[in-house]
Amino acid sequence: MSELVTGEAVALELRPAKLPSRALAVLLDLAVAVIAYIVVTIGVVAATASLDEAAQTALSIAMFVLLLVGGPIAVETLSHGRSLGKLACGLRVVRDDGGPIRFRHSLVRGLIGVIEILMTLGVVAVIASLVSARGRRLGDVFAGTLVVRERVPLARTGLVPPPPPWLAGRFSELDLSAVPDGLWLAIRQYLTRMQQLDPQVGWSMAEQLATDLAARTGAPAPQGVPPAAYLAAVLQERQAREARRAFSHGSFEGGAHSVSGAGAGVGGPGPYGPPVVPTAAAAPPTSPYGAEGDRSPASDDAVRQAPAPQDPPADDRPATGFAPPA
Image (cartoon, rainbow, N blue to C red; front, side, top):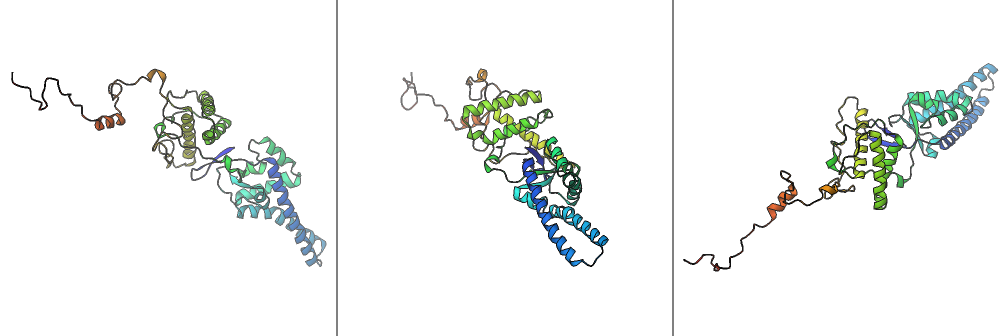
């Protein structure tokens, strides 16, 4: 999976198209272009039978360039990356930043495609796609584009629950440069499916992922933070940095400081649970405020709502409350 950030700072995790689906889309596009070329050629030859051989040759070359090169370029430009073959296979060409392609992208892809697809029968394109980490051919590399899958299973497109608000900004100084894409993918897949897992299995998976992430960042997970909440907060911090990087003018103030999901921390601890209290500090406090100087709003409310203590009546005191004279 490849995470793309659009111009609106929206993180998109799109799956690059595999080589078989791309090859099938190219074959469908070539079949349509060849059929159109044959039909147009027959019509033009019948209409220009009176021309000399040189004129007919020049006209054939012009039709070849127009239909087999200019046609795909025009279709991809007007459809924003969806040719007939890609539409049938559920594919689309996008820019490296996730935005729709323009004429210059289609032009570079089409011109280089003549060499690596038509002239070499697709051998160069296949080799380049196999070597590239995201399956890009030379036309995609020079044009700055990527072919992605538009149709993905609904069961695999879950949303990551937002981290609890008490973790906002806690990992803003964390170094994430050494974390590989495979680990980010595993973390995201776990967070989207953690509520479907057995609690014990999900907890062990979260601990393992948190250990791997802490080893990559060089900083251990904070004590008392549930592993799932730690993963969600670090993942959100990474997406916030990608979003800020997409805004060169720096007007984006997103990230863990300002992004709070719907319902996060409202009416309950959320899907990640409350902070984990260490065993050594689990003893109940001796006063409503816990340790000295540690007052919480919940304890204040409990003290305000508690009834005022009353002295029980003494045994030698009458019901009026006055002691008799000596």
